[in-house]
Length: 152
Image (cartoon, rainbow, N blue to C red; front, side, top):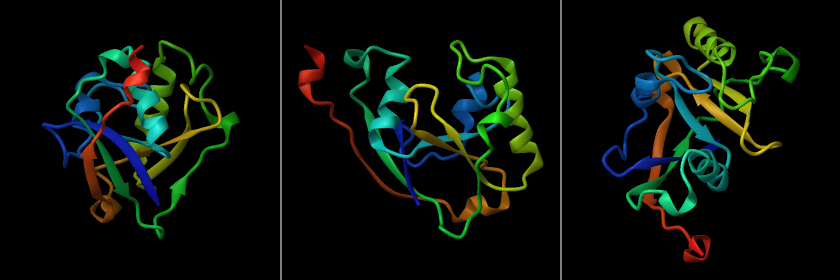
């Protein structure tokens, strides 16, 4: 399965989850490494753009294409199992604890969750400390240039 993420040029081959652990995010508390990826390039952009105006997206982003081996089991929790308010902004501690539990259990390496930004689309959260992580690899990283019409 191919998934995508936007990455700053200084971290082109970085699938460590260190950035997420430094600050925490929707699905992980501070101190817990998690790699966030999206099912499409457009969703990867939307997930970044909600934190910045599109005009402020740094010019040094790369679109990173990540291959998750088809044989890996992807956990997809039922919506009813997600914590209340998982899709709220700002995100809450309950969604972070849900993600933390996924990381700590280490039952599977990848969890598919719905996007809070683009309803109907999904993100894939990767546990870099899972033994199956070694099979996940970057297959491409190319300049990400936004269409100038977005800046009007």
